[in-house]
Every structure is written in C-alpha cells, then in structure tokens.
Length: 369
Image 1: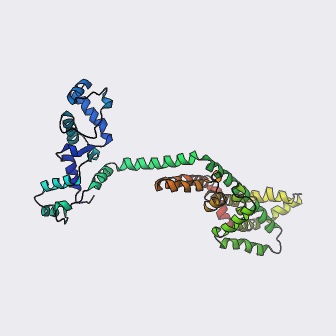
Image 2: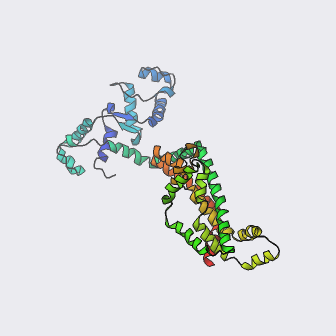
Image 3: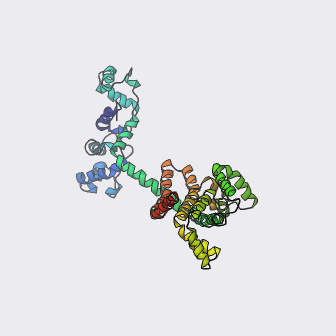
C-alpha cells in the first residue's frame, strides 16, 4: 500500500487515547470474552465489577456505546491495546479527531507534508482516510476473503441452478433431441447424395454450403415467424426443427461417405443386403468417428444456444440452462454469473475428455482421406 497516510492511520488506530472513538469487529468478541474469563474467573466477580447482571459469559458482548469511565472501559482499552489484532479494530471517531491527532504529532502542517510527501495548506484540509482501515483489514485477510467469495459464488450458482431444475431437464431433452436428429437426418441426406449421385447433387451441396454464409441471427426472425404460424412456440419442436438438418454436417458426411471403400457395399449387395441394411449396418458402422464429431457439434450448438432459445421459448417453464444463467446474471453479482458459466462448461469438457479418441479420429481421418 503506497498511501502516505497508511502508517499514521494504523498508529492512530492502535494508540488513540480516547477509547470512545474506538470499536471492535464482531469477530473480536470471542477473544474479548476469553480474556474476561481469565481475568475474573467467575461470572459473579465480573457482574460485581462491571455492575452488570449477565446470566452467563456467552451473553457478554462488546457494547455499541461505552460509559465515560469504569471497569468496562478499562478492560476494553486493555484488550484493544494489547490483545486485539489490527484488523479487528474499528474507528468510530469523526474526521476532526483524526486531524487533531495529526496536529499533536507534528509541529506544523509543513512538517507533515515533508514527512508524508503531501501538499496540504492546513491540517483541516487532510482528508479522513476511511479506506485505509478497509484496506488494512483486506490485506490481512486476503486468503480468507478470496476463499469465502470463491466458495460463496459457486455455492450460490449451484443452488440457483439446482433450485430451478426444470431448466436442467429442458436442456437435457433439447440436447438429446438435437443429437438424435443430427445423426439421423444429416446422415440420411448425405447417404442419398453419396450413393445415388443425383444430377443436381453439386447444386444441392452448393446450396448447403450457402447456408454457412449467413449468421444464425439472420435466420432468427424468419424462423420465429414460421414457428409462430405453425403454433410451435414454447415447445421442444421450436428448438429442434430449425437445426434438424445442417448444411455443413451434410457436406462433411457426404465427403466421408464418398471415401468409404465401394467394394464393401458391392459385396454386401451380392449377399442380398438391402439399402437400409447397407446404410445402417455398414455405412454408419464405418462412420463412427465422423458421427462422434457431428454428435459433439450438435451437443455444443444445443447446449450453448441462448438467443434463439430465449426468442422461441419465452415461457419460463421452457427455459434452458443458458437462459436461466442469463436471468441469474441480471439479478446476482458478476462473480455468481461467471461461476455459473464455469459450472455449465464442465459437461462439455467431460464429454470431450471421455470421447476424445473417437473425436480426434473423426477430425484426422477425413483430412487424411
């Protein structure tokens, strides 16, 4: 801490003569009562000395307002000067008292300016450094404060996410439906283009690739109007159907299907295998790596979908996890929101770690072919 008044502030807090201007944090009460137990031994002696009527030592508390004199003032003064830690000491005095203290410490304001490298015209111009006490308490408890806010943010984020468990259920259903359609609709379309090779297949592929030229937000309003006319808003169909067929996935699958050995299909057809069996038992079986990549892509797209999900499912009962986290960030501190995002990222990380071998094969093999 580079503030010029820091040392003066600490010295003032520890050595101010007027106990009426000093106070203690609530955390100091335990140590204060422990000192009283050791000094007086019995509760009767404490009551007679303080002229009090406590029923037990657990009732003893540091009063907000002290009497002008007496045993209580003496005990509290002794505790502050000798036993209390600096971060437990609080200041109840006004700014003028602190300035008066400075005037007693220095012969004139010029000496104070020379010592503290300041340029005040008079002691009355010296600001009351209330932030010094807060900084001192923080610097002495950095680890505890960091730990407290770390766990508090994650605990609150988890509590809010689990309290509204419906958003977790909606997200799970949405993700499963998205993966199901991604690994059924797209492979069927790609298989038809790869196996039957229609004359307009090139134009279709170009049309599929053209969809990648527009951001998803551009299609937000047309999709919303179409779903509204079909009366599908606030349903899972509104979330799943617009992304059931993906031009990039179809393009990727067609290229992978084209690279599969044709001898396998010819041998299977000679043995009497039908088109559905060729697709289900041979094509999909040989395409596990690329299907894993597509499934992961569908999972990521559905799991992190916020804006479109918020537009087509405005009913709170249909909110997904990302929409719920957004609502949480509007009413909680930023730390809670960031903690919720970290927690929400764990499923994606876990899935990638668990399926990393299959996913990497799905990325490397098409490039090699």
